[in-house]
Length: 137
Image 1 (cartoon, rainbow, N blue to C red):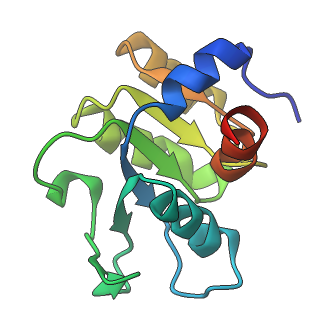
Image 2 (image 1 turned 180 degrees about the horizontal axis):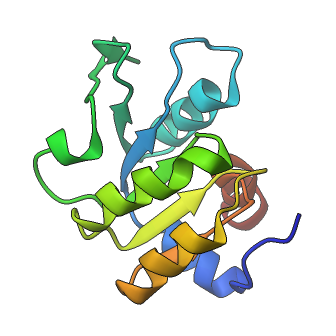
């Protein structure tokens, strides 16, 4: 699977943003959708879990949808199957995040184009944890 064409400098700029809504964050500590945001939280990011099946994860209030979140979001980090991404990004655009980050293995060109057309940077088929460790550790 291809990935975005952002340079390391551009990824570093994205990683300097700290308000991260995590769509599909998991309660299961063995899943990437749990340990990646936990790592980010442990490294200074303000994680906002979005999971309609949980009340809280990592001691943080879970939101049913991105639109339920009060305040600004820098990054919407998505842990959902590629086929579910269009509806997530359509909703996320309304919150005007600076970045939409699709984790490894996730790619939806139609949804990504909607975000790009709205002036939002799109990172796809990359892991925030791996990129943070590669570029900032």
